[in-house]
Length: 318
Image (cartoon, rainbow, N blue to C red; front, side):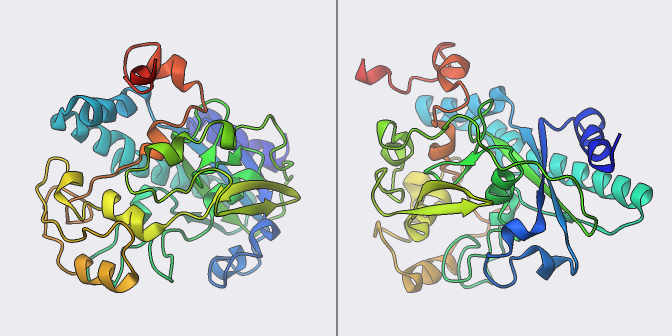
């Protein structure tokens, strides 16, 4: 068994990852300065990518909150699908993988946080972590790395899609300075149906995701390209970070931004006024809109949720 096979076997069979792939560090060398593998680990040669699916039961809890108005159910979604458990689970998997790699193969390995908790930042920053010019929401571009490692492809919603679970998984990344056996970039069936679907754009409450085919860009990695949306991050923030009470969930929050397309100055001013909240890891109310992830049909959504009566989405159109 090669080193690469041993690493994959450890992640799949010991750490219970759902998928594992390996990409060359060079796949992300065209990322902005500071976001390249060698900016994190000088001499980086390989990126180990793995995914951990989000349980269907935790996903459907969001439907109870959003479709039925059961705000208590949202606690299950927030804790087990969005904020705490998925991040901690992947963090521990990364730590174990790094220890395994370093202890057995005499090299350096770096765990790279890449889950949704990376979007949580203290309010002493001028803007939310995934908005504004700095775009601090990732250390390395996880979806692009996963596509380069053959795990899946990026969808119009900018999320990693896999055939098995659609966008409903968390990505783990490990950098290492040893050269491994690289997987071919994803070449499977087209997962995002683009204009023939467009659900992510239709369900976005802030129209932050443009209709498929409009305001898009091509994302390429290792010779593989796909079309993704130019998402209006500031508009997304209004819903996902509850800058209006209609998006507040269980925690009441003041209406701080009524504009559907706020500029950086408006967003920064509102961000500094967000109320402190003890119930969130970010210390202020979060809504976690996530509709572009929750209702994406990729990954057998209909069989998992619609056919089981766990979501009413689409029923009103029948």
